[in-house]
Image 1 (cartoon, rainbow, N blue to C red):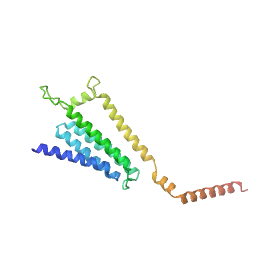
Image 2: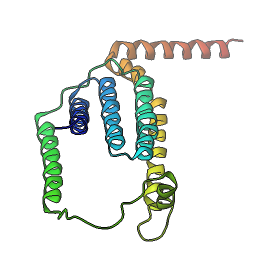
Image 3: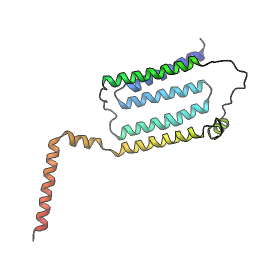
Image 4: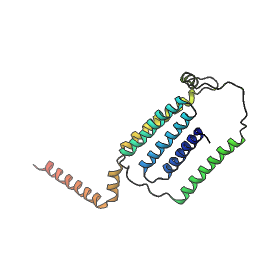
Length: 202
């Protein structure tokens, strides 16, 4: 086992462990941090494959874009240190079954694929070649997926704005404390009576 293989296994362990922690942690801020390290591991795999441009895009878009938006939305909702409620057993079983089915489907596709040797020239991975392929609308081009990814980023930003506009703390305090509702109602009615008295006073 050479050094390149050891680096690959270390990156694979980094991705899998942090991905598992991201979906099992009850603290949403820690889940975002675990997701951050998992995506950094994916970028490391791209560097290991010598696809430097794709690795840079992975870091800029996902690590520096999506995850940062998620962390900002967590801070804006003031739920960074709170623990999420425990999920029901049925949801845990369904999630584990979905993950197992996805893993089994991936292994099945890899096992059925015929990895044969080829004499074709390797595909160049330069920035210019990748840019032409991504913006091409011909057969094999990636113009449509490129636009779909931009819509994903837009949806993530809109979601952060919507979450930030909510005020869950005030709503929870009002609904969880009936006495506060009664006091607010009494003070409102008293202010209304005083206002009517002042208006009707000659």
